[in-house]
Structure formats: structure tokens, C-alpha cells
Image 1 (tube, rainbow, N blue to C red):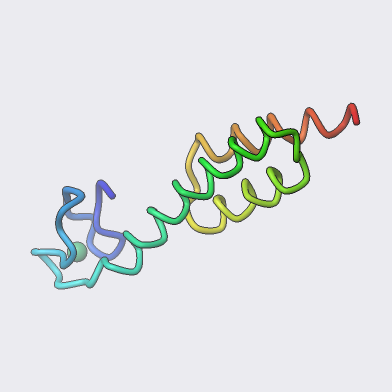
Image 2 (image 1 turned 90 degrees about the vertical axis):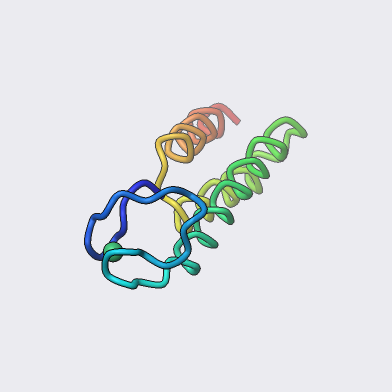
Length: 84
Ligand SMILES: [Zn+2]
């Protein structure tokens, strides 16, 4: 997390409480971590050929953390599923 979602203060990944406004960032950091885990799961499922579960995992990744990587994974899987 680069910026506090409340006050936009610059953060580093080890800060759990914003030093400027006191916002507890633990849930946001947990969601970010879960999103990264779901992105990895989507890629692993894609490699095994389970495109539907891979797409589900990519969608879950996006619900936890809207990253460019998660969007690309979802678009890639969506393109593949059009041909099955
Ligand atoms: Zn803040």
C-alpha cells in the first residue's frame, strides 16, 4: 500500500497504523495479501487447465485488490474461455 486510503499519506508496507491520521490499515493490508494469493492461485489453476476455477480465482483476486496484474489475468483467462 503506497498511500493511506483516508488521508493519502505516503506509507511503506510495514506500517499498520497511519502515522498521520491513525487509520488502522490491517484489514486493507490483509485484503491486498489475499488478492495477491488469489492471483497466484488463478495462474496455477490456469496452468492445470481448469479455466473456470482460474476465472473464479481471478474474480476473487479483483474483489480483494484491484491490481493491473489481476485485471490482465482475468482478461487473459476470459479470452481463452471464448475458444473452449
Ligand atoms: Zn492516514
